[in-house]
Amino acid sequence: MISQYRLITFLCLIFSGVSITNFAQADCDGNAQCTSTNSTASGTKTTPVKRKLLTDTLFTNPVYVTAGLTRNDNVNRASDNSDKLSDNTYNINFSNGTSFSTSLHTRILMSGSIGWEKQQQYDALDRISAGLNGELQYRASGAFDSATFGLFARASIDRYKSNLRSGNRISTGVNVRKPLNDSTDISGTISNNLRAAENNVFNNKDKSFSLSLEYLPIKNRTIYLSGEYRVGDTVSTSIATSQSAALADVISQDDVYGSITRFAYRFEAISRILTLGYNMSLGPRDSVDIFWTHVVSASSKTPVYAGASGSGPYAGAAQTGPGGNAIYISNQIGIAYLMSF
Image 1 (cartoon, rainbow, N blue to C red):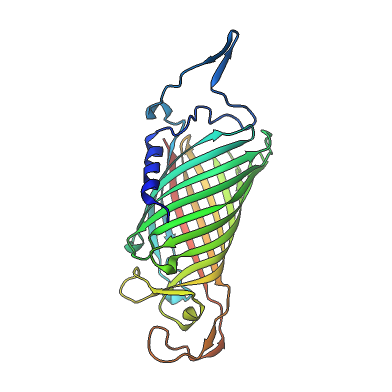
Image 2 (cartoon, rainbow, N blue to C red):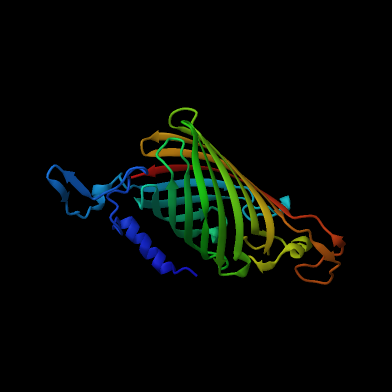
């Protein structure tokens, strides 16, 4: 598992403004060479680099802050409408990063983030998270319509109040971003995602493909649309049912949703995620973002019942033969305030 103490130490270095490498020329254009020397008529002059204070780089290497509220109508991802639970999530996130050129056409991006989520009702889902992102980017030229290709790795740690969910996440993949014209960008990502948690039911892995479109109808206004296709493990928490038991690879009693006993079921699924959003700039360093996310997740196998009987949490599977696929649908509506300083 990822060492959480090393990760948090590295994040502290990022947020304190300590330079790990000389990034003085980090903002050089992709098709221009970066150099730390100055050419004069009398020759080449090397100037000693003075360590910059955090106040010297204010707004040139900003900290990004996001604070928001999200309403989720199916926070437990239940299939049965009568078993769906809704909740509001309050969140705040801080991130900071830097970049530096490695050649005429490549650069490395590095960033760190730390965040907090608070549930209004189911506080066992409250969590603190911290993460690191690294990406190697390639761009063939500085032409406006030139595509940017990326190879990325992301790692994060989560600490929940729940005794089942805390753990680590790792994601690796490739992406590409390309301007279509002066008001429209398109991007795509392929990723492989792993999660290791304290309970095996939340040890998940999946693969995903996403496609995003951003459109600027007028200045300082952005409409964005993204779709994601995900294949792999998902977890649904519900009252015990024979269908869920027949589908699940791993089952564990959940510790989040109040006095009614519910079980977390991990099963293989195909998920489709659609997000539609609108971003409005309020000034040079802040904006408001409004979004809607629609998730449809269906089990990738059909349960076969063996006519189980008796007492216990999975009793009642009296039917024999194939059953229907488990499908859960979730909608999230949110608003966020974004700023940098």
